[in-house]
Length: 240
Image (tube, rainbow, N blue to C red; front, side, top):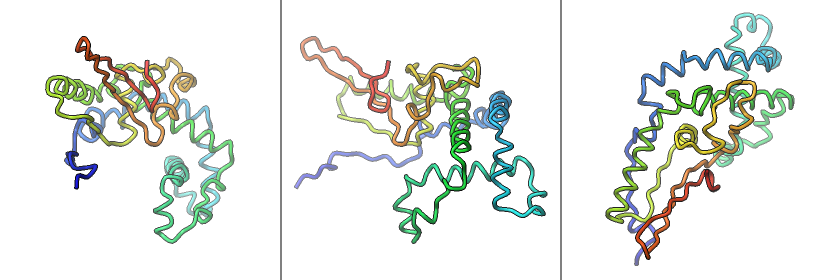
């Protein structure tokens, strides 16, 4: 009896088209020491990240231990706990499997609403600067997606010649979408910012790289003339 997966071919090999962050020494150097760091620090200072982290860590550690922590340690600790808070809704099954309840992992109660807003903005800013158009939409953080764009084009050409597949699916982390959408020049995903304080006027993380972010190329065949119309979608919305 035929099954729905009978004609599905899987490729579980690591693909540098999708994992380009892991294979680029140039990008690693940019991520560690690129000019985006000073830009981000300017925004973090304006949002009083140091003060937020100092206020947050004092809830957990005694003064003797706190005195041994650097400011960077305090910020990292604060951002890590905030990071746990942001993924709770995505790991419900894992929480149950561990024998815990959502109430026991109520990280949100550790922050004020104002602090959550600041940490969310700064997290979006880091993604914008290191994976999105940033201050230069021709920077390495966007150009790194060029092999993936080339792969889409090449597999499209192959499909048009042979019609060997009905759909070609690629699965990766949402961070792959940010530079890919930027290099495709999609409106709302490719505009760089002249002023980091206004980075989210055009680029909004919840629109570009939400959970289950996706980009689709859909081909419509006009049988009367043999031509194709291509529609580009970002997160199920037609991209322009």
